[in-house]
Image 1 (cartoon, rainbow, N blue to C red):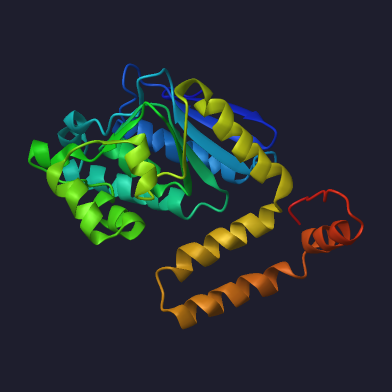
Image 2 (image 1 turned 45 degrees about the vertical axis):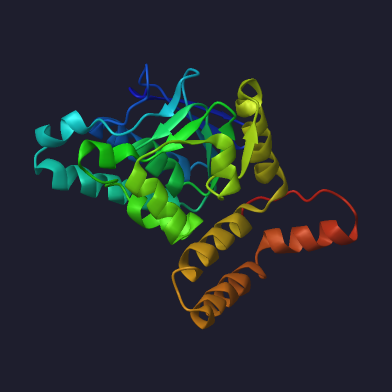
Length: 258
Protein backbone atom coordinates (compact mmCIF):
# COMPACT_ATOMS: atom_id res chain seq x y z
CA UNK A 1 0.00 0.00 0.00
CA UNK A 2 2.85 2.37 0.86
CA UNK A 3 5.86 3.01 -1.37
CA UNK A 4 8.48 3.92 1.20
CA UNK A 5 7.25 2.29 4.42
CA UNK A 6 6.06 -1.04 5.76
CA UNK A 7 3.38 -1.03 8.48
CA UNK A 8 2.54 -3.81 10.93
CA UNK A 9 0.02 -3.50 13.75
CA UNK A 10 -0.25 -5.87 16.72
CA UNK A 11 -0.90 -5.52 20.44
CA UNK A 12 -2.02 -1.90 19.88
CA UNK A 13 1.41 -0.99 18.47
CA UNK A 14 1.88 0.15 14.87
CA UNK A 15 5.43 -0.48 13.70
CA UNK A 16 6.42 1.82 10.85
CA UNK A 17 9.54 0.63 9.04
CA UNK A 18 11.33 3.02 6.69
CA UNK A 19 12.06 0.99 3.57
CA UNK A 20 14.31 2.90 1.19
CA UNK A 21 17.39 0.70 0.90
CA UNK A 22 20.24 0.80 1.32
CA UNK A 23 20.29 3.69 3.84
CA UNK A 24 16.61 4.64 4.23
CA UNK A 25 17.09 8.23 3.15
CA UNK A 26 14.13 10.55 3.54
CA UNK A 27 12.97 11.83 0.17
CA UNK A 28 10.35 14.55 -0.04
CA UNK A 29 7.86 11.95 -1.26
CA UNK A 30 8.70 9.73 1.73
CA UNK A 31 8.05 12.59 4.15
CA UNK A 32 4.72 13.28 2.43
CA UNK A 33 3.81 9.61 2.67
CA UNK A 34 4.74 9.46 6.35
CA UNK A 35 2.35 12.34 7.00
CA UNK A 36 -0.47 10.35 5.38
CA UNK A 37 0.42 7.30 7.46
CA UNK A 38 0.18 9.37 10.63
CA UNK A 39 -3.23 10.63 9.50
CA UNK A 40 -4.48 7.06 9.29
CA UNK A 41 -2.91 5.91 12.57
CA UNK A 42 -4.19 8.87 14.56
CA UNK A 43 -7.80 7.79 14.05
CA UNK A 44 -7.14 4.04 14.28
CA UNK A 45 -8.53 2.83 17.61
CA UNK A 46 -6.42 -0.33 17.37
CA UNK A 47 -3.24 1.79 17.57
CA UNK A 48 -2.15 3.34 20.85
CA UNK A 49 1.62 3.56 20.36
CA UNK A 50 3.78 3.98 17.25
CA UNK A 51 7.22 2.41 16.83
CA UNK A 52 9.40 3.86 14.07
CA UNK A 53 12.47 2.02 12.78
CA UNK A 54 14.49 1.38 9.63
CA UNK A 55 14.71 -1.67 7.41
CA UNK A 56 17.88 -3.75 7.32
CA UNK A 57 20.82 -3.54 9.70
CA UNK A 58 22.71 -0.53 8.37
CA UNK A 59 20.52 2.49 8.97
CA UNK A 60 17.53 3.90 10.75
CA UNK A 61 17.87 6.74 8.26
CA UNK A 62 21.07 8.27 6.92
CA UNK A 63 19.35 11.59 6.30
CA UNK A 64 17.30 13.66 3.92
CA UNK A 65 17.67 13.22 0.18
CA UNK A 66 18.98 16.74 -0.39
CA UNK A 67 19.35 16.12 -4.14
CA UNK A 68 15.57 16.53 -4.37
CA UNK A 69 15.38 19.97 -2.79
CA UNK A 70 15.80 21.88 -6.02
CA UNK A 71 13.29 19.68 -7.87
CA UNK A 72 10.35 20.60 -5.67
CA UNK A 73 8.15 23.50 -6.63
CA UNK A 74 9.13 26.22 -4.20
CA UNK A 75 12.68 24.87 -3.96
CA UNK A 76 14.55 24.31 -0.69
CA UNK A 77 12.17 26.54 1.28
CA UNK A 78 9.21 24.31 0.49
CA UNK A 79 11.16 21.13 1.25
CA UNK A 80 12.32 22.49 4.60
CA UNK A 81 8.83 23.68 5.46
CA UNK A 82 7.42 20.23 4.79
CA UNK A 83 10.03 18.70 7.07
CA UNK A 84 9.30 21.24 9.80
CA UNK A 85 5.56 20.60 9.60
CA UNK A 86 5.91 16.81 9.65
CA UNK A 87 8.41 16.66 12.50
CA UNK A 88 6.35 19.08 14.56
CA UNK A 89 3.37 16.83 13.88
CA UNK A 90 5.31 13.86 15.27
CA UNK A 91 6.45 15.87 18.29
CA UNK A 92 2.86 16.85 19.12
CA UNK A 93 1.24 13.56 18.06
CA UNK A 94 -1.40 12.43 20.59
CA UNK A 95 0.00 8.89 20.72
CA UNK A 96 3.55 8.06 21.87
CA UNK A 97 6.00 7.79 18.98
CA UNK A 98 9.09 5.71 19.76
CA UNK A 99 12.20 5.56 17.57
CA UNK A 100 14.21 2.34 17.40
CA UNK A 101 17.59 3.29 15.94
CA UNK A 102 18.84 0.14 14.23
CA UNK A 103 21.90 1.74 12.63
CA UNK A 104 22.91 5.12 11.25
CA UNK A 105 20.76 8.04 12.37
CA UNK A 106 22.34 10.96 10.59
CA UNK A 107 21.20 14.39 9.42
CA UNK A 108 17.47 14.32 8.71
CA UNK A 109 17.30 10.80 10.14
CA UNK A 110 18.63 12.10 13.44
CA UNK A 111 16.24 15.05 13.28
CA UNK A 112 13.39 12.59 12.76
CA UNK A 113 14.27 10.68 15.93
CA UNK A 114 14.70 13.97 17.82
CA UNK A 115 11.02 14.67 17.11
CA UNK A 116 9.96 11.32 18.58
CA UNK A 117 8.92 11.05 22.22
CA UNK A 118 11.27 8.21 23.18
CA UNK A 119 14.28 6.63 21.49
CA UNK A 120 16.07 3.29 21.87
CA UNK A 121 19.26 2.44 20.03
CA UNK A 122 21.23 -0.56 18.85
CA UNK A 123 24.73 -0.73 20.28
CA UNK A 124 25.88 -0.45 16.68
CA UNK A 125 24.00 2.79 16.00
CA UNK A 126 25.90 5.92 15.03
CA UNK A 127 24.15 9.23 15.58
CA UNK A 128 25.05 12.67 14.30
CA UNK A 129 24.30 15.86 12.41
CA UNK A 130 27.05 16.15 9.78
CA UNK A 131 25.52 19.03 7.80
CA UNK A 132 28.33 21.45 8.71
CA UNK A 133 30.67 19.29 6.62
CA UNK A 134 28.40 19.90 3.61
CA UNK A 135 28.35 23.65 4.06
CA UNK A 136 24.76 23.70 5.35
CA UNK A 137 23.05 23.19 8.71
CA UNK A 138 20.42 20.77 10.06
CA UNK A 139 17.26 22.18 8.51
CA UNK A 140 14.54 19.94 9.92
CA UNK A 141 14.74 21.27 13.48
CA UNK A 142 18.07 19.88 14.62
CA UNK A 143 19.49 23.24 15.72
CA UNK A 144 16.43 23.77 17.93
CA UNK A 145 15.53 20.35 19.32
CA UNK A 146 19.02 19.11 20.11
CA UNK A 147 19.91 21.97 22.54
CA UNK A 148 16.55 21.58 24.24
CA UNK A 149 17.20 17.88 24.72
CA UNK A 150 20.86 17.71 25.74
CA UNK A 151 21.80 21.29 26.60
CA UNK A 152 23.28 24.15 24.60
CA UNK A 153 27.01 23.48 24.99
CA UNK A 154 26.85 19.75 24.31
CA UNK A 155 24.56 20.40 21.34
CA UNK A 156 26.93 23.01 19.91
CA UNK A 157 29.77 20.53 20.12
CA UNK A 158 27.73 18.07 18.07
CA UNK A 159 26.47 20.67 15.60
CA UNK A 160 29.75 22.54 15.02
CA UNK A 161 31.94 19.45 14.68
CA UNK A 162 29.55 17.36 12.61
CA UNK A 163 31.04 14.28 14.27
CA UNK A 164 29.06 11.13 14.93
CA UNK A 165 28.56 9.73 18.42
CA UNK A 166 28.14 6.14 19.53
CA UNK A 167 24.93 4.80 21.00
CA UNK A 168 26.50 4.76 24.47
CA UNK A 169 27.56 8.41 24.11
CA UNK A 170 24.04 9.25 22.97
CA UNK A 171 22.59 7.60 26.06
CA UNK A 172 25.07 9.33 28.36
CA UNK A 173 24.02 12.78 27.17
CA UNK A 174 20.30 11.97 27.14
CA UNK A 175 19.84 11.69 23.39
CA UNK A 176 18.44 8.15 23.64
CA UNK A 177 16.71 6.40 26.51
CA UNK A 178 18.35 2.99 26.34
CA UNK A 179 20.86 0.97 24.32
CA UNK A 180 20.37 -2.70 23.46
CA UNK A 181 22.50 -5.34 21.72
CA UNK A 182 21.92 -4.95 17.99
CA UNK A 183 20.10 -8.25 17.52
CA UNK A 184 17.75 -7.52 20.44
CA UNK A 185 16.81 -3.92 19.59
CA UNK A 186 13.59 -4.42 17.64
CA UNK A 187 12.16 -6.95 20.08
CA UNK A 188 13.14 -4.89 23.13
CA UNK A 189 11.72 -1.67 21.66
CA UNK A 190 8.51 -3.43 20.69
CA UNK A 191 8.13 -4.92 24.17
CA UNK A 192 8.39 -1.46 25.72
CA UNK A 193 5.94 -0.01 23.22
CA UNK A 194 3.49 -2.86 23.84
CA UNK A 195 3.81 -2.40 27.59
CA UNK A 196 2.82 1.25 27.22
CA UNK A 197 -0.09 0.29 24.99
CA UNK A 198 -1.37 -2.42 27.34
CA UNK A 199 -0.95 -0.77 30.72
CA UNK A 200 -1.58 2.91 30.06
CA UNK A 201 -4.88 4.64 29.38
CA UNK A 202 -4.85 6.13 25.85
CA UNK A 203 -6.40 9.41 27.03
CA UNK A 204 -3.80 9.65 29.80
CA UNK A 205 -0.99 9.13 27.31
CA UNK A 206 -2.37 11.93 25.13
CA UNK A 207 -2.85 14.21 28.15
CA UNK A 208 0.70 13.67 29.38
CA UNK A 209 2.13 14.34 25.92
CA UNK A 210 0.16 17.59 25.63
CA UNK A 211 1.06 18.74 29.15
CA UNK A 212 4.77 18.09 28.63
CA UNK A 213 5.01 19.44 25.08
CA UNK A 214 3.12 22.62 25.88
CA UNK A 215 4.43 23.01 29.41
CA UNK A 216 8.16 22.86 28.67
CA UNK A 217 7.73 25.74 26.23
CA UNK A 218 6.01 27.89 28.87
CA UNK A 219 6.91 29.49 32.22
CA UNK A 220 6.34 27.13 35.15
CA UNK A 221 3.11 28.81 36.24
CA UNK A 222 1.59 28.43 32.79
CA UNK A 223 2.81 24.84 32.62
CA UNK A 224 1.06 24.04 35.90
CA UNK A 225 -2.15 25.50 34.53
CA UNK A 226 -1.87 23.28 31.46
CA UNK A 227 -1.26 20.28 33.71
CA UNK A 228 -4.36 21.08 35.77
CA UNK A 229 -6.43 21.47 32.60
CA UNK A 230 -5.39 18.02 31.42
CA UNK A 231 -6.02 16.48 34.84
CA UNK A 232 -9.51 17.94 35.05
CA UNK A 233 -10.23 16.62 31.58
CA UNK A 234 -9.15 13.11 32.59
CA UNK A 235 -10.73 12.64 36.01
CA UNK A 236 -14.26 12.40 34.59
CA UNK A 237 -13.43 9.83 31.88
CA UNK A 238 -14.53 6.20 31.89
CA UNK A 239 -10.90 5.12 31.82
CA UNK A 240 -10.15 7.04 35.02
CA UNK A 241 -13.04 5.28 36.75
CA UNK A 242 -11.84 1.93 35.44
CA UNK A 243 -8.25 2.58 36.50
CA UNK A 244 -9.20 3.59 40.04
CA UNK A 245 -11.60 0.66 40.43
CA UNK A 246 -8.97 -1.76 39.13
CA UNK A 247 -6.44 -0.37 41.60
CA UNK A 248 -8.69 -0.99 44.60
CA UNK A 249 -9.81 -4.43 43.42
CA UNK A 250 -6.21 -5.43 42.61
CA UNK A 251 -6.76 -6.35 38.95
CA UNK A 252 -5.43 -5.17 35.62
CA UNK A 253 -7.50 -2.30 34.19
CA UNK A 254 -9.15 -2.57 30.79
CA UNK A 255 -8.89 0.82 29.13
CA UNK A 256 -11.10 1.77 26.20
CA UNK A 257 -9.97 5.27 25.38
CA UNK A 258 -13.16 6.86 26.68
